[in-house]
Length: 207
Image 1: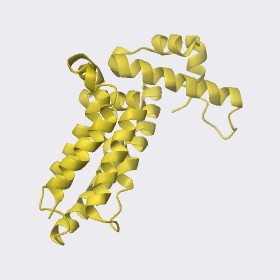
Image 2 (image 1 turned 30 degrees about the horizontal axis):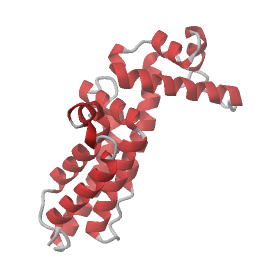
Image 3 (image 1 turned 45 degrees about the horizontal axis):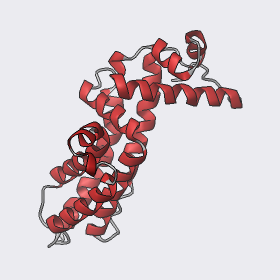
Image 4 (image 1 turned 90 degrees about the horizontal axis):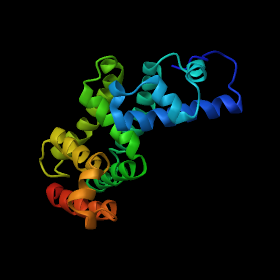
């Protein structure tokens, strides 16, 4: 929560500084985890003094919560777009493409979210998982309907989503591993991953 909360709109400079702080925090959290980060580290990365930063956010946890809220919306958006009215296999393939786009274009956000999940979210588990759980259950119901109607193969819908999350996020969260063990596969990894994953899931879901 921003410290400057109120009805008065932020000035252009205030908006700029707020985004600068959040961008710096994302970089620090992605590298060190929220437990290893400090207000001073974030302020230094943002190019601000610590007192100046604290004018905008009252604590490191306030910054962390704002980033979690934003990142969760980003993370949920591709799943939210999976439509029950579309062609099932194509909808799932489009979901995979959107998840890969998130990994490609927002790697720091992906790493930050992964680090938070690994930490167990001790301070904000319910506020993070409640909206995700609601969306997750709605999309599981969509997948179950498609299976019952014989429109996709009878796979476990839960493990289908888990596997998509694991395979798409790998390319952001474990980019260092890819670069080290197979540097020749690193440059075009997202395009190659899309071709591979789409083919794999089409075969899995074919009736």
